[in-house]
Amino acid sequence: MTVPQTPSLLGLPEYLEATKAQSLVTALTKTWTATMGKPPEDLDGDLAACRRWFDPVAQGQRLRRELAQLRQLSPDVSDPGPPLTLNVGPAKRLVTPEGRCALDLLTSLPDRSVHALTDAQLMPYDRLLAHLYAGWGRHRLQSVVDLLVGSTKPLQIPAAGVVIALLVNRCTSEARALTRFALGSTRDIVDRAFFGAVQAFTDVLAPRRRARRNDPHLVSGWMLYEAARRLGEGLIVQEARNGHDGKVWIRAEAEGDAIDVVARDLVRGNRAHATQERLGLAYDALVSALRKDLPKLAGFGLVHERPQHSRELRQRLLEALSRRIEAGA
Image 1 (cartoon, rainbow, N blue to C red):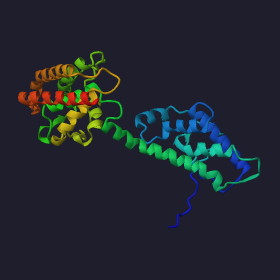
Image 2: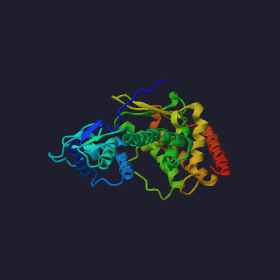
Image 3: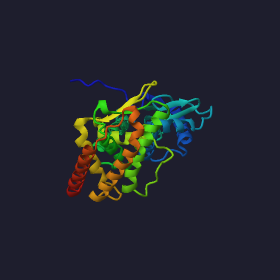
Image 4: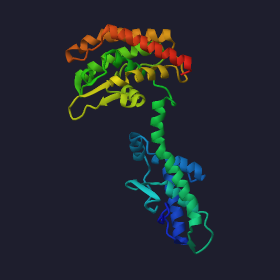
């Protein structure tokens, strides 16, 4: 098979006049210094710094905020254009990883009037960029896998409480799903009812944890998504959009996995690990608090807890925790 020749990722011409090369060096150096807050330094370190902007999993909210805060470039700073720079606003642009590699190459060229750029000069940078982007691209998938298999930080205690609260209320089918009301006081009632139960659970297992009592968004907040990242397709989260309510439930076939994930993560991480006694107390506190607030949800058809099921679930959780403790998590 014949492999077609492809141009270098740096996008530089085969022949480059010295004046053009110097112009590129000046523009890239000034742009880098203005946006990164310091002059270019070590290539490997600078490419690692580029991840702040070019990592595929960079948070959009942070990017928007920090891009808005970038200094505008002086009109006398020319723009080399893509792939060496990326325009991000009026008089604002970033030096791309390709641009930083090009800068490294251009500053190493000998003193000549015209430079003939060869594959031997360009290929090391192309390989470096390929490895860089491959690593960044796999990072997203690897981070998801690590969460699912439990090789990264454990599920936070309140998020573990969310899973247990859903199981206690038997939200294990779409018919018994917890409704995520789109707006208004109804959504707040559901949030507060389940938040109280989760907070009771957390107070036993992590009594020093600072509670966000002024922001009890369980159904609509971070705890649900924290749990969803660990349970994967086992936890169904339907968004409330365009005035339509959403739903959340744990698949019936994933109930055992959900119990095991909670047990696994309660004995992992740099925090006090749960014991059977403490988990039993935390579970009882959650059930007691939930039963206290569930009548508020009866009018919405969201009460599905049954005492016999809750007793059986308690035993399953304690047995799963015992197996995890014996196995060293």
